Image (cartoon, rainbow, N blue to C red; front, side, top):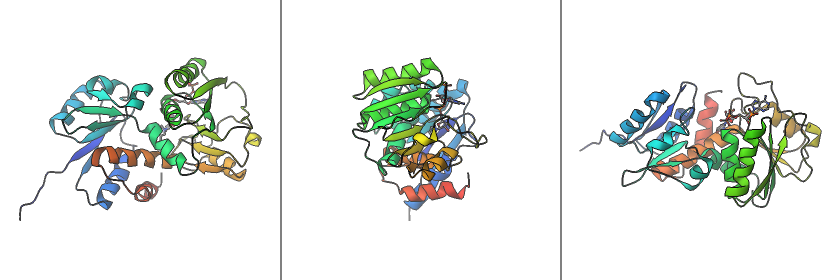
Length: 283
Ligand code: NDP
C-alpha cells in the first residue's frame, strides 16, 4: 500500500523561543484529531526573519505563528492582512492560502474574545482595560469588533494609552476614554468586564498585582487576566474571593490556538485537549 511520508508543516518564529509552550498545545490537537501535521518551534533572529519566511514559502508551510519580536516586522514579508491584523498593525498568525499567498492574521485578541464569550456576551458591555501594549491593543480592537460599547483604557504611560484610545474611537464602532494610572485605580461601578492586559503578575514576578482598588470589584463583574503563567494570578484570586466570574490567560492562549488551527486545517479543535496539554506542563 502506498504511504505518504510528507507531513504538512506549521510552526512559530520568535526569539527567544524556548519558553513558548504553544508547540505542546498544537501538537496535542493534531494528535487528538488524527492529523499527521507538525508544528516546529523555531528561534529566528530579527535579521533572519525575511529568510525564514522565504523558507516557509519554499517548503510549502501551511502557516506559522509570529511572536516577539516579529509581530510587526513580519508584515513586509507577507502578501496581505486580515481585517483585525490591519487595524491592530501586528500579526501573530500567518495563513497560506490555496493559491500560495501568505496572509497575516492576529488571533491575540480573537482568542481572548473567544475565551471571554464562554462566560459573558461582550455585545453592549462596558470594559476597563488595564494596559496599552501589544496584547492590550489586540484585545481592545477585537472586543470593539465583537460589540462592546465602551472601553476605559487605564495605562501608566500616556502616549501608548492615547494610541489605543484613538484606535478604538477612529477604527471601530466602540468608543473609549483614557484614565492615567498614577495612583490606585478604582473600577467604575457600571463596569461589566475588567481585563488585565499588562505584564504585571507574569512569572517569575508572580506576587506582583495591578494597582486597583479591590473593594471596587463587585460580583456582577467578569475579571479576565492575559497572564497565562501562572494561570491563577493574584488578581484572579482577589476577584474570585469577591464573587466575580474569572477568565484566565490559559483560556486566551487556548482560544488563539483553536482559531489558528481553524485557519490552517479547517478543523474545530477540542479546546479541552489543548488546555490539558498546557496544564500537564505545569507552567
Ligand atoms: P508590552 O510590553 O507591549 O506592554 C506591557 C503593558 O504593561 C504596557 O501597557 C505597560 O505600561 C504595562 N505595564 C508593565 N509593567 C507595569 C507596571 N509595573 N505598572 C503599570 N503598567 C505596567 O507587552 P504585551 O502587551 O505584548 O504583553 C502583555 C502581557 O500579555 C504579557 O505578560 C504576555 O504574557 C500577555 N499575553 C498573553 C497572551 C495569551 O495568550 N495569554 C497573548 C499575548 C500576550 P506602559 O505603557 O506604561 O509601559
